[in-house]
Image 1 (cartoon, rainbow, N blue to C red):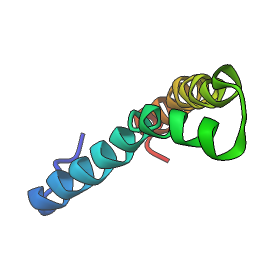
Image 2: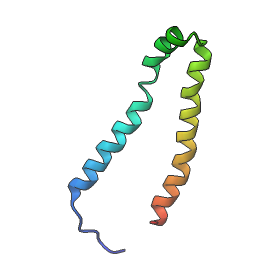
Image 3: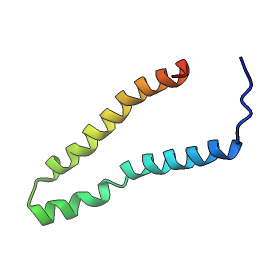
Image 4: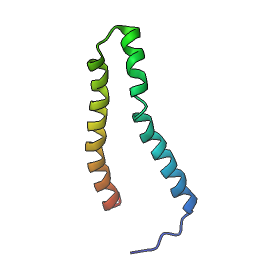
Length: 72
């Protein structure tokens, strides 16, 4: 395998950006009650969006991991 001689700080920057993006998913619970109060929706209807997002994230990481390993 050929050694990559790129800038290590790009990896650090990319990691920070990805972690911040993933962290935003977990702030969703802060918006549950305000959405219920504002629009009159049921809490279970609002909370299901977090479940759908978490499931989509889990499934998409399967494909993204395969793409990374293959080196698209």
